[in-house]
Image (cartoon, rainbow, N blue to C red):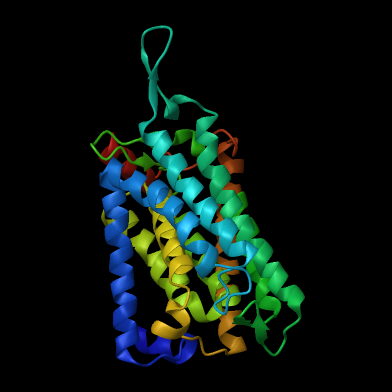
Length: 326
């Protein structure tokens, strides 16, 4: 039933083979994310060595400006390296240590300035997408059209979702509570990013991909978001941003390398129905407004500082994450 709704309202690819490929992509992203999470050597290979080789030998051709698949835009290049910067920065937070002059071992995650990196890279990635939504509105393609080799349509949904993204940035909280798990994987745990924020983010990000990368959104929106949300709820709780950065890095490297995938090899186009664009952006805006109202009320009632305090320490979701990773 749910699949029929997705096909009928949001997407028009009814060939079961394409949805089977979609499912394979979802599980492949989750598998490589898990490999990069539990093995340090794999994380370095996937997010440092592989992209270095691709940057020199592959992407200048497959992601050249003006290529017929739209991967040569400023946005794709910026998104690629900002995602990889996040992956490598989080690996550094998890594993970098040194012996100080006092003879003691010090860890990077103990430095408060280092804990500002995760919210900063997250906010930058959201802001990039917000700018793109507003840019698509500025194209004035009220009936739809091709821009940078991608079909898109301008409308109020771009403004609605841009506002949702700004609210999503404003509601990022509790980064000074980030810590490293005590198990062998040494995951970066951010307990204040609870399920409510994750769902609001997912709805906003899906609407962004639907609005701005419309015919690719089944992969870079739906599959990619599930690839980090499923592990957050069922495999390693509290490590959402780490899952998000790694799956995003994996996907965008794949797209930059095989740019024809979503258009030629396994296309799942949207219905190009303005009502669908409006609906997904309205849902994203409503969820982020609700989150912002709830969070600001919580800050006021508990007299918290949103820049230095954790907001959800008294919730079961927060406490469960801390217990499982301490």
